[in-house]
Amino acid sequence: MRNSFRDGSFKILVSVIVPLSIFGGYLLWHLIFGMNAYCQQRTERLLAMQNSVDDATIAFSKQIQEWKDMLLRAQDPALYSKHKNAFFEYGDQVQQALLRTKVAMQNEHMDTSMIEQTLIEHKTLSSDYLLAKSLLNPLEIASFREVDKQVIGIDRSLQKQLAAIRSDIIRHSRQQSEEASSAQWNGYLAGFFGACSLMIMALAGFAIAKRFAGNES
Image 1 (cartoon, rainbow, N blue to C red):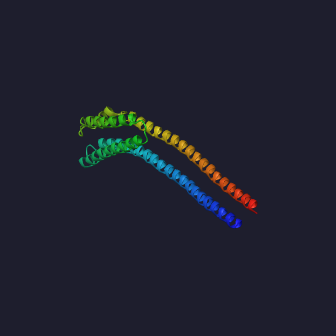
Image 2: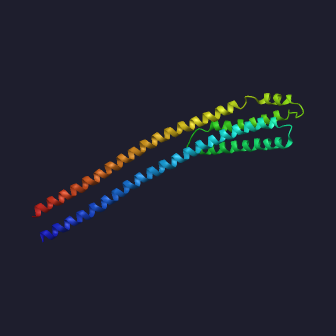
Image 3: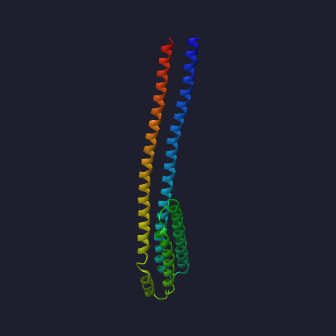
């Protein structure tokens, strides 16, 4: 009778501890997996934001080059038209890349005042180029230099702003990476202590069951 009662109590204790340990292990695994997935997604978003501003910088450099080529090919209508169209296409790419960067920065709760100003200045810059182009006279070689002088150096301010935006994004990415690493480490510690607690509970349960069995005997 006593042995039967003792065995029944021991089985009940084991039936409680084992599922609890399994459930704790599942929660620990879910916590670690969830944190890793979140860190990976954030890293991908930050990289995409950095790639967007890089796309804007590259497209802007190509737009400036198309401006130079457009002036040099002013006497050839076909080539002139080709470089003129490319000038506008790269200008659109700059705007689109900057808008993608702006949206990404807003999603990261970053200050977007500089990139908003850059969007406006880029549109103004394109207008200045077109205004200078209106002074071009394909029949006069000297007019090429005169037109280029009208806009020489005006792209430097925009290039500096793009570089500053990229630096802000890199700085933000590093800060987020450090915070994520800290949070991940804290999560691991919490999981470790949780696992230790479950182990202690299991050992204590077995110790109580053994003592109970000894008293019954």
